[in-house]
Image (cartoon, rainbow, N blue to C red; front, side, top):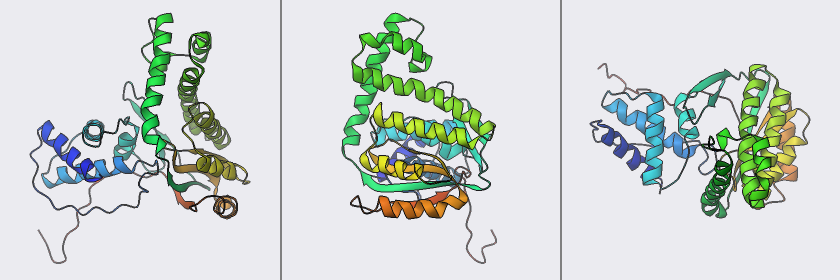
Length: 306
């Protein structure tokens, strides 16, 4: 249940040595729950910041992100990575965050939308198969990594593998294992290329990489679903949309598109026309932009001068 995230964050802060006070928490969120847009990490990071503010203490943002991840692992029993917590804590307005999950180094890359817009399309569905398939993907990647390590002792993770190395080991892997590893290896390459495209303000190339990423997530890693594939297809058919892909863990949740601002109305209309009548639930469409990460705002009562 969602309260486990709150309990976990409090427990991790206490474990770190923070002397917490009791608190009454009112939690309000506009982040779609279960939509693959970091709702749990947003809750964890916000609660952590609030609890620390109550006792006038601070924890460095990157350390706090790791603390929140431990809370999710131990109390929500969700084997998440670190990306969601890092962006919730380290987000910067009009910037993308390039994160090295091995070294935990990060870079803010300017991503001022200007005349463009980010469009989130929420399927409002979450297929139950997702919870059982995540550990399967992890196991398949470990199986592939074991083969690669036998061929090259320097390989510590799929991060160290090139597409050529993976192709060379293909005959020693089950086809599904190869596909899972191929997605991971090529997605790492796409991430680096996407950062380069943003630095060059090349939205067309960035959009192309979004489309390639979704195709791999759907066909190779197989964590998409008919609803997500349909939304991406609809978005790609709209003039002025650079690209689209699923976001989050998959099997439902949200897809995201990068588009010219003047294409937004056409995209909304086409989603309603081609998607909403085809599936049980209509897609919810929002526009957004990159904003700052979690922060504390103090609200004072009227007339309270202390």
